[in-house]
Length: 521
Image (cartoon, rainbow, N blue to C red; front, side):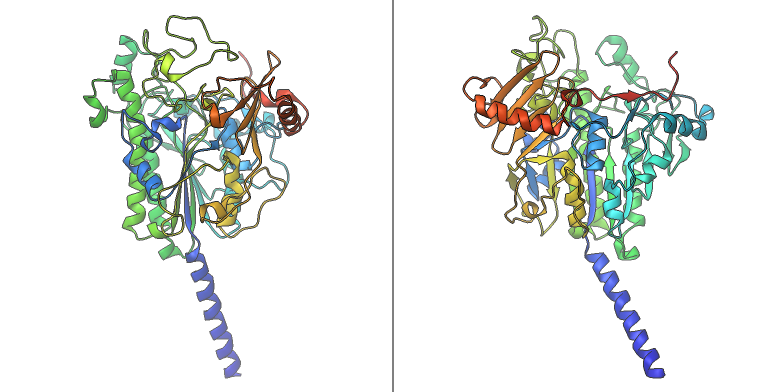
């Protein structure tokens, strides 16, 4: 009898040891999701007017991707990311309009708001698997910290249902246009931020003027900057969930506001303050990028400090292409062919940084901006860091989509590939092995859908004008030469694929529909 008890004890200890060793061997994962960050704003992608040493370090010590597609703007990008699906399909999810939380803290009735949103917002399909779930199923503790990860207005129950054990941040997109929130939410509980008194979170003007400058520099009621709050919450979560203490790996999704405008910073970064090539507005916008880079550095150093950097994957990417926030009279124009010319038509003429006054060249020389189906509207940065596992200093040109992260993370955490998803894992590529790359990616835009193949062919559709345009990107980076006549067969081939991906309706590739939880006034 004693021998049996002894054997059971030994087996229990062995199982406990094996389970904990296995858990510790799984990598922690931190996904940093920048907002409106054109890849040209980063030093590693060629930025000349400011440095991003912490993000560049991840690139130098990891793998940088050049051929990465996000979505046309933030809400569908986040939905695509956490569902693992392209945004061109017949919409199976709804985007609830923002503004329902734009009230004083004492006027917020979370139960009432939840009922209103639930009444108009489509619920998730039964059995739907979201990004947080793939890590949870593999034994990870999960967190979402920062900007809301779904739609333009959400609820605690919805955030939790996407697989986040812990969540902190905004629940309303329109409030996230300001950087001094009087309150945020932590696991569904309102957390008031002392010293921040502006209902709109101190949102500023989109255009530079003497009045808007003074509005930005007036710090009354603006005590605590939101990014400072978020990075401190992330550092605390890392500290509290150190796998050396918990024997459980963690996955953090960190969707920052930065550098989405309107421009707002506590102070200009010293590096930019005396730059003679930048206006005050440009210095402040550059500072938003610098603050984001500093946050990346703080996270890196925390991992190093507590001894878990070697087994933590850091992913840095963004939601959509570049947007112009430094709009200044006589210098930067958002919608005209030149500062003095007529509006561009998005057929023969389009936005380029060099002719529209964008000193930063945030879209890295590509055509177009956020919301369009030009390359500058959807191409995003992507950097993977994993010490000793991902080879240092590698630049990869493989075609990758925003929604591929779901199954890539599922594989990295030891889970199965989630079926019936557009998401495709590229773990083999990360580990330096030969991988079967995706044939193409399809994405939506305000203008219409587009398809890009892994060998560089691109077909874009402008729905309102019923115009298809075929390009070959390897020799036409700026999308200046339409190849419809010379390549009719290729045009028809891509057109057929794109139409099928749009579920037989070109309008699925247009601007998404929104539901409004508040009655129209």
